[in-house]
Length: 605
Image (cartoon, rainbow, N blue to C red):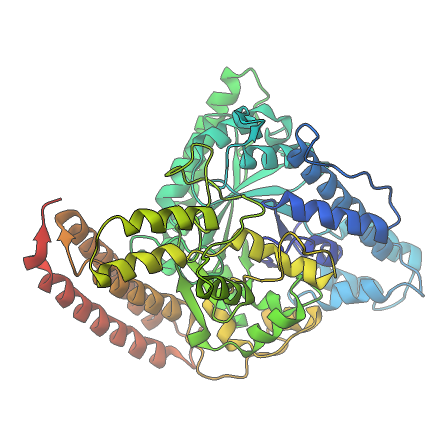
């Protein structure tokens, strides 16, 4: 079956899409559950078992392999209840056709399914005929999962380190592999060779003779080179990457993995041009590996999907990404935070998101992972953090320890946002006899880290009125810059109508094109890199800044040619886009002068 929709809902935070499939999969919409927080997952499993009158037996931390078992049990529950909703939708009666009508009304007018259904019902309304057609043709949305590959903390029992398969990401992978799901696992945050190798142990990741794969592998990537390297690595294990999910390096929500100045348009274009070569070269490696393993080799070359996400906000952008770059689906994340029918965000946080303007949305350094992280000023987790700093007790109690991976002080690992780490780090800083200015700089870098692994999940607990004694009530939220242009909550139908251009929920007229927005975020990012190098710059840093600038310059060249050649697309905004590109070039040239002025400060590497 083909997909019902040309968009998908990506993973957002830890808790914002934790139960999204239960809300939207019956309407044919694909969405993604984060597997970071098994404690949150267990709390929601208990809640849903009570709601759906299912038997519940707690999976406690005293049990062997509790993390994987919690994840498997939750995913199986979400699957069972989602299927029930979908089966009810397909069980067409004159009294129960509301959800079925909703399903079709949300499809784009170009949808083959929608046209076939219209043809089927235009002359008569034969319930049995309709029911048969619906059962044979209607797809349910995929219940996909996400693992951040580097969030793979080692675990201990009675101070004895457990084998690697009990690491957090490994256990999450096993939890998904043991579930009944027939869907995809999205691997993000870069390559983890040990985790990738561990996937070899699970049958569901291997292709059948007919090319079907029960559990498909999706790589979230921000450039072609990374996709090719990871795709080949997995193929050597006999594992096929079914989808490469391209995400803007900086114009996205959550963690931001900046490229070396490579912009989204040129990256998408490279994937379009190289897709056939990518498919063929990786497939050859796959078949050789499967043959060596004495496994079934598919009779035909396996398909690859290319999808894209990061900053898309209008029907025009959505269709352009689909048609010009030949991608299979476009991810819409940030605006869905304002759709309670689809995501799980507490009322107070929604109100803050609705009111947010550009200045309230910033690329922060609060993540304990040391990766730039999109955040919202005034979020309650940061307010909670500020109060602790005022009391002279910076840092979080660290109740969940999912990113307790820094080993500066403890071999077992410690989180850089924790009170324990920050106390030790400040004590270390006190002993260095720094100038007041330098001390303040390094002190602020220590205390800016926030407990995101708790904050990104607490919203779900608050939404459902569940106990937050362990977590507290502080919420971290990670919208992309696109949030500034959405100013109200929406129901699911309204949001989808916006995606397909049946309505427009953006009232502001000053929203820049997604490619322009990304370019300007990269220019700001480059300015920050230059500022960091202003005190002392090595030759290596200088070369990196020049390479970054050169790639941005090439990206501007690409966009100028792209938009100059557009005759119908973006006709109303074409001249403004070209003007903004010229301004971007001027800004880049100014930044290049700043890099050159630092040459006389070169230090020995």
